Length: 249
Image (cartoon, rainbow, N blue to C red; front, top):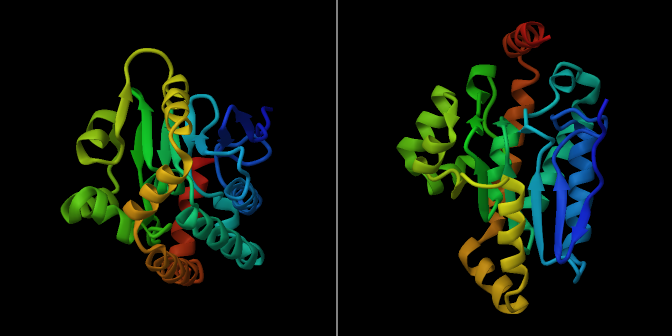
């Protein structure tokens, strides 16, 4: 079994792997808490000028850990960890780049809406099946997705739940660059290196101006997670999730 690589500082770029600590391409409550701690430390570390999120080989992230959705004893800790991580991501003061090579599903996709640049391999795919699961989107994407994709694009992506290939995702505005030569990680690291060489104060101030009021995002994160938690207490939703989990097993 493969295991979760520790964050690695390459020059002034902190490379962070999005996965569980036992090597699965999903986020459980421990992974959310770890990501929040990593971002919190990176925010105050002057050596870190850029953060790059990547997945395991051949897969960015398949979403949340279904077993925790179905275990009510874990809901309180899960909701707290998810909220802390999303709030940290929404308010993070430094550039965040995402390197996507493979599938980005659910939270593995909504994380991308907080990234300043998303660079993907040609074979990458993107899907947000929340509505199919009886759940609502997370990570303040009910604000960020219409801003980035337009209302019609966001509605189709979230409510139909279709899988997008890299070309369609780029045309919609979800990703910014498709890598056709070399690896997505090499290209993303090169972009991060470009950013890390910029005057730090000017870069951070410009990013802050472009981002705008993050308090609005944090309020929406709290509202979304409340609706998400309520859905996990609904018998019909739980039966649907159990059925999906059996089919995926």
